[in-house]
Image (cartoon, rainbow, N blue to C red):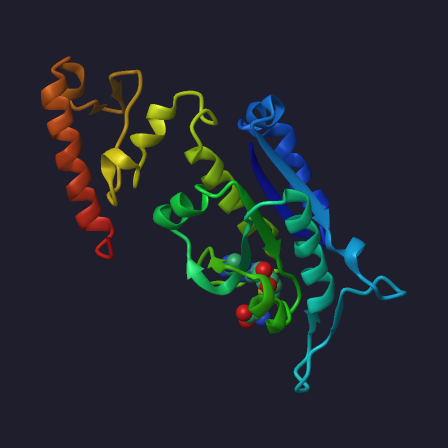
Length: 227
Ligand SMILES: C[S@@+](CC[C@H](N)C(=O)[O-])C[C@H]1O[C@@H](n2cnc3c(N)ncnc32)[C@H](O)[C@@H]1O
């Protein structure tokens, strides 16, 4: 059983994902459990406050360390085994296939969604194993980044995607390690005078694989010099 716990001030953002996700089957089968925790439930403030003004005079509110630490410690207690805690943050390491692969090996993962000006640094020092960014731009909260990490992780867990082999054939997957996959085609054979490459219709699997590898290397070289 794999547990993924998500800490957020806006649990409703996740509702639609679980209702309509193509991965819903996996949750129903019970092999993966995703639990959403309302951060506000962990405040000790009598007005239910979870944020406060930042020290130093800059505008904007910061999520306080206490509710975050208490929430993560509550999750650690109920999971009762090693937990890997991720904070979604634009200041974190940029996510890629390799990082997602590593995280998806953990049996208990906590995804913490920040808001406002971010989270008190002392929470990060106390409880966070890794900070992850989805790119060099700023969103209003960590919920969408958490959903991105969640879906990318779930796809790598055998049994989640109907045909696990198809994930091996994705860009960055085992069969295309660190490369883009390249183009794919379906019926009809011709669209606006553009034809499916002959080799794909040949039935010669050796030649098809050779073509796929060549076009994958070419596309990666042209589009992603960083890889
Ligand atoms: C408005 S942002 C805070 C940005 C913060 N003031 C800074 O400059 O680093 C609020 C929250 O959204 C989430 N967030 C925003 N952009 C993100 C990104 N690119 N990747 C991951 N999380 C992000 C984080 O959880 C963050 O704490």
